[in-house]
Amino acid sequence: MKRQVHCIQHAIHCAHKQGKRVDCGSGTALGILLVVTVCSMLVFLAVLGHVLSAKHQAHEIATAAALSGASVLQRMETHACEAASRTVTASKATVQSCSETRDEVTVRVEVALNIPFAKSVSAAARAGLEACEK
Picture 1 (cartoon, rainbow, N blue to C red):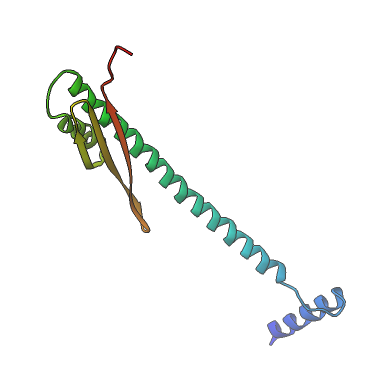
Picture 2 (cartoon, rainbow, N blue to C red):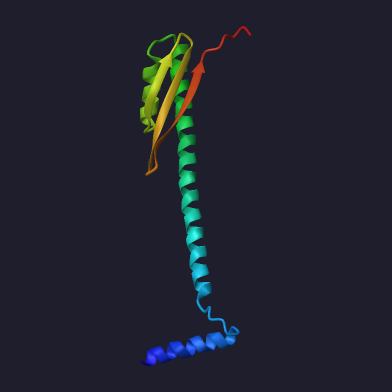
C-alpha cells in the first residue's frame, strides 16, 4: 500500500512537472534502444572484420602456395601441386583445387570460419615461369 501511494505521488509529480503529460521513463526506453543498436552494430562490424581478415589470409596462402609450386617448376621438377599442397597444409587451410601446366601453377585454397552463416572463404592465385628474353 505504501509503495502504491509513492508511485501515485511520483506520477502526479511527473504530470505536474511535464505540463499534465505523463511520460516519465521514456528516456530510459530510448537509452536502452540506443545501447542495443550500438551493441548490434559492434557485433556486425566484428564479424565483418573476421570475414575480411580470413579472406586476406586465404589470398596470402594461395599466393604462397602458387609461388611454391612455381619454384618446383623452375627447378624442372614435377609434382608442383604437391609442393603447393604442403604449403597450404602448413598454413592450416585446405586445397580446393590445384592445376599445373608446363610453366604455370594455379591454386585455390579454402580457410574455415567459425561463424554460423559462412563456413569458409576461398581465394585463388596463379604463378608461373616467364621467359627472360623479353
